[in-house]
Amino acid sequence: MDERNSLFDVRLEGVQIENFKNVKQGTVVLPNASNRKKPDILGLYGQNGSGKTALIDAISLLKCLLMGMSVPSQYADYINLDSDSAKITYSFILSRINSSETIKIIYKCVLIKEEATSGQNLIEESVAAPETYKAVVQNEKLTAILMRNGKIIKRSHSLIDTDSELLPFLPKGQYNSIFGESKINSAELLATKRYVAMTSRSFIFSRELINLFMQYC
Image 1 (cartoon, rainbow, N blue to C red):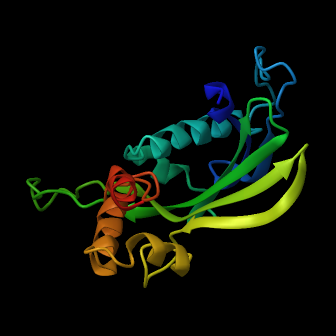
Image 2: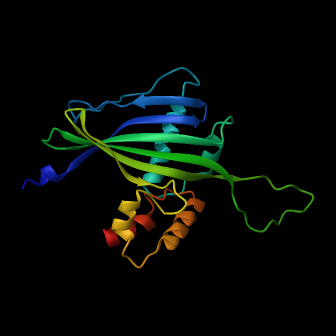
Image 3: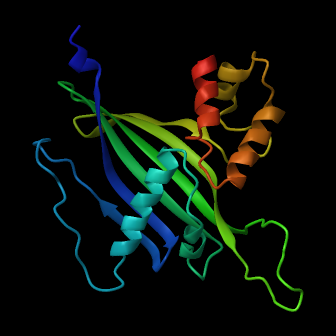
């Protein structure tokens, strides 16, 4: 078997932003080039306030999430003032060399603003301590769509959905198939999920969950 045929080319295909910085709602599509050796995007331009910096910040956020890093605290201030949360959707194309089939992966997450816990207040009582906030990652969803020659051949399949208070993630059948017979119960995983949220990280891409997947899958 040719080892190259088992490798996937992963490309960011698009970014959708809602209530992030000055962008109420916006979508940027990044088409795939026919020649993969050449770049698709050479630059980004637009009028002041059109969302250029918001897009760059959204891509920087993606890097933090995928690497399991804490989201920088300034992202709490990036949530639009008219909303209590921001939602960002990233779409990727996974293509295998010498194959007409591709997999479209869609990752969605919600950012909310929470007051950051601080240590003991050593400032005099007469002086008010400044409020500090952190960005918390919630409602992560990862779905997959099988495509051939750019056309959908299999409906969207939910891989993981963290929008649940009873289970660490959904679908329930998928959770049971991985952890149903393990010594780890859902309460422990829910505690891990809460801890990851407190540290402003993605639960899906956290090292804690990835290590468990590698152990039990």
